[in-house]
Length: 486
Image 1 (cartoon, rainbow, N blue to C red):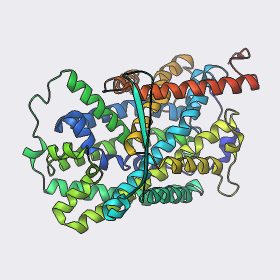
Image 2 (image 1 turned 45 degrees about the horizontal axis):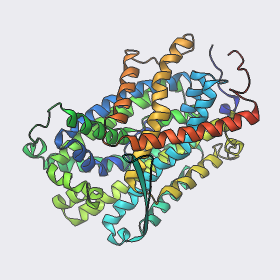
Image 3 (image 1 turned 90 degrees about the horizontal axis):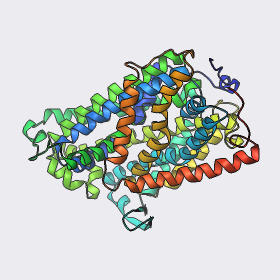
Image 4 (image 1 turned 60 degrees about the vertical axis):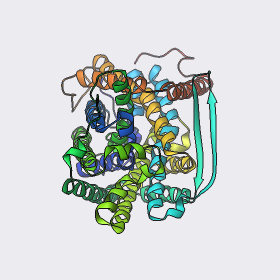
């Protein structure tokens, strides 16, 4: 049976078209990640064969993008994944629990994503103003569940932390307005993003050395255990850098002609960013020897690889200018993340499955102001953590509590409700969904010490489930009452 959109969705303004949708997706995808993770992905794979990680990551993004495209076109509602999980698994049964868990994890994972961009802004600002790197305080929290499994998270406060907080506050201010104005802002931010990328690619291509770029170490393509472990770690980093192609789905109730706009915005964004990443990273490898990048992975210089490259080619001022452009790019990603995720607690609150304060719309701009402010405040609080800790926690939590459930769910939805209107149908169904599922499981398990992040995600699931059961019992909801027929 075709579901009618929630009446509250109609109060949101459908002001996002295809161009704005692509812009919002692309600026979230091209954040600080690709500019600071190049040494990390080289180190993980052990050489320039790490480019396979980018390519496999692009294939995984396209397969998962087709999952999002079908669900987004069929269920164009505010909240994206919240609505998908609820509808697929049953709005009055398991789906209510899973959608609650999704919002529960989002209160951590979304600020983790935005905070990683804020920390990246501060790191590149430190290239221009080295005094920002000066530490003020640091502390490491560690815990374990056995002699061989432990986890740690480090809090580091530097002068640059103020820059991180300022970037977050400014993003909140810009997102605090009508969605049609936000769409125009995203177009301007995207222009700066493409400016930074174009200059880096041009510098790499015009100074490209193929012998340097394809200087593979002995046994680089030996398909042994070490190769697959390295590729798993490389794909985890690449997955982080590609994420964001689904941002428009969170704004489904604010998209014009969503059945056509959402799938196109997703797939075009993936193709654009995949082409940019592959060309940019190969061009950088043609200028900077991969062994230098490998060594940089263990030092603070990994944050400045691109600026260092531009400085060596064009001089000090060029390195500083490209650092400014990269800061612009990272800020654009922060803006896009906060804009998209603020719609999810709003949708859950309207559904009675989250705190009601998040269901309020700004009376003038008709956007969920309370949700936006809360997610922004949480982002500010997370700006004191290390970038590596933010990225690892973000990727594993979202894979386990969102992406795997959706890859399975799109197939369940097809079988359970075959008559539902689907303006876009996944190509080669169900192959992309199965490949996405296999790829996410591979990333979770094919890494050294993968247990640490997985245990953290399991702990979050357990705590969320306990919170849901307490709330459900008080409200007499599933599983404490018999679920009525759908």
